[in-house]
Length: 107
Picture 1 (cartoon, rainbow, N blue to C red):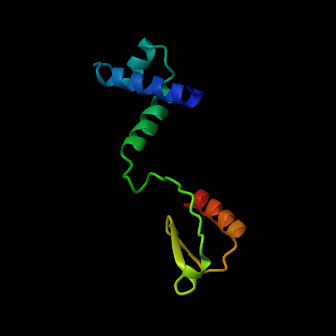
Picture 2 (cartoon, helix red, strand yellow):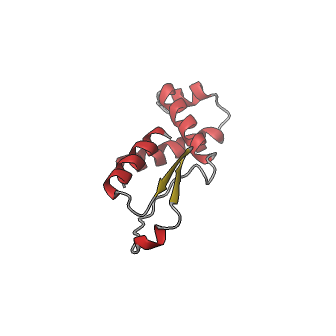
Picture 3 (cartoon, one colour):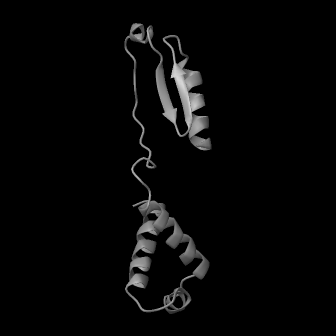
């Protein structure tokens, strides 16, 4: 198990235990030797992950265009966040990858 996955599992258990306790956050942290600021960070982080909509979760798929002739009539539109990239038949894959990487960081 990766270190990040271990941390996440640890904090998920701590937050579950906290929810099942009648203690305040500060009292729970004192009783369990936890740093309160870390407790708050993980509480917010885990809550944000659980409230993401499916549209906010990203997944990537490799796409290879075998026949560029199919692009002659219409460009393909790739939407990343609020940005739309249109690809014509003669697009440069290296430039496209750099654009996508930049947009993912910004969006």
